[in-house]
Length: 168
Image 1 (tube, rainbow, N blue to C red):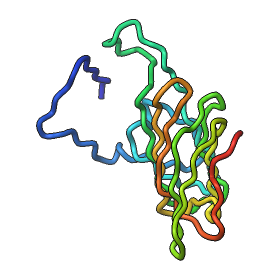
Image 2 (cartoon, helix red, strand yellow; image 1 turned 135 degrees about the horizontal axis):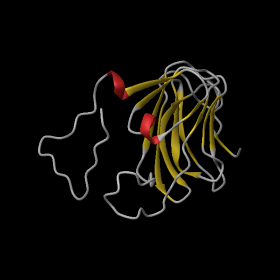
Image 3 (tube, rainbow, N blue to C red; image 1 turned 60 degrees about the horizontal axis):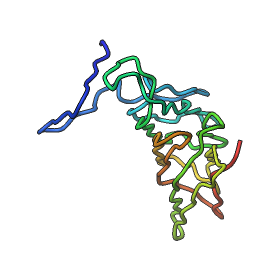
Image 4 (cartoon, helix red, strand yellow; image 1 turned 180 degrees about the horizontal axis):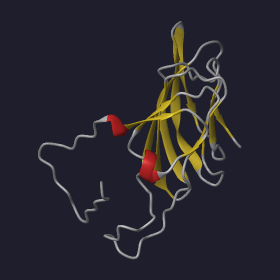
C-alpha cells in the first residue's frame, strides 16, 4: 500500500483502528528498529538475549509541514511485549538519545517498585529475574524531543529487584 499523508487537523468521529496481522511484528533477532517498519506497532520480543535499537531521534523542522519525505520522527512510539522471557535483552538508543520516565516493576509475592531513568541512561536491560523481563512485561517508548525518549511500562520480575536502566 502506498504511503498516505495528511496535513492539518484530522477528525474522526468514530476513531481509528489499528488491527490486522501487519500490526504485530515479532522480533526474533537483534534488530535496528525503523519508524516505517516498527513505530505504532506491537513488537513482540521473542529473542531472550535480543538487542533492540531504537532509531535516532530526528527533531529538525521539515521544510514544510506537509512534506511526506520529511525525516522528523517526534511522536513515534514503540510498544514492546516480552513473549519469550529475557536472559539479557536490551532496548537501547543510539547512545546520544536518552530515556526519561520510569518503569514499574512488579513481583507476584511482594509490592512493586518504580525505577526512574537517570540523565545518562540509554539502555534498558532485562534479565528475566531481578531486572525484569518475565513474559508479559510491556514497555512503551516514545520520541518526545531532541535526544529524549519517554519510557513507561510494567516490568515483571522476581528476586530482589534492581533498576533495569543503564548506560551503554
